[in-house]
Image (tube, rainbow, N blue to C red; front, side, top):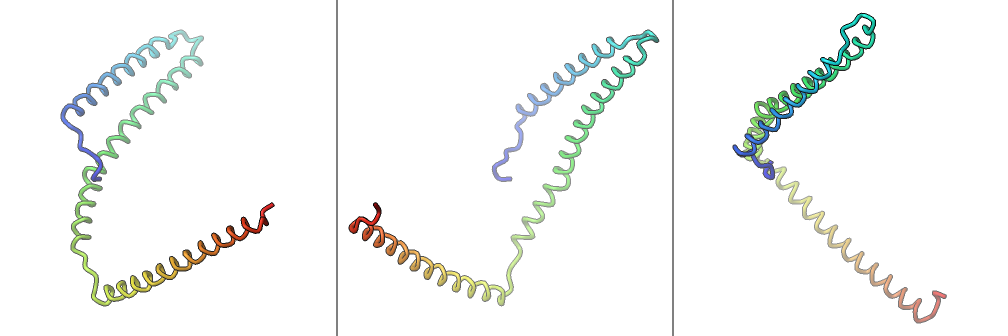
Length: 142
């Protein structure tokens, strides 16, 4: 969360204006679609299909809006306070002395293993270089 920046007043105003414009555009589109629905009985099947399409579109928009608001609500009132509290609790944690000793011993063992592995790797690289030199000088690569 250190890299995230809280929205500024200007960016919030701009976002609100964009959302209002988007809602107005959607409203206009829906009104146009509603006007296109036929009134006559003989076009009832077509009217039902058009109404169903409009209802599904409105439902999708409402679902997205509610989902966004629910996510914002859950993050604002549950996740962020929980993370702040967890951060404080984690800062207070202290290992028992026996655990500290065990981890120090494990660190020593791992450091020794790293030193051995580096030595083996160094020897292996030297062997590969010597074999390649021998191959070049003897002409065995042809």
